[in-house]
Amino acid sequence: MVAAKAIVRASERSARPTLLGDDGLQRRHELDRRFRLFAVVGATAAVLVLITVAVFVDSFVL
Image (tube, rainbow, N blue to C red; front, side, top):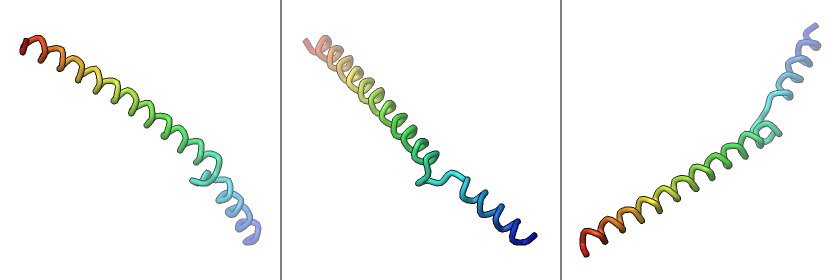
């Protein structure tokens, strides 16, 4: 009985997703993809803000 419980516990532990397991790597790739999307959107917004500021400064200075 004790041996059977130990085997069940060991199989449950091995079934859990770990960072090095498939589920962990998939979640890590998802986070990398979200971070890349966030970085691209942030960089695009920063460039648009800089262009807008440059146009307004140029129109007021000249």
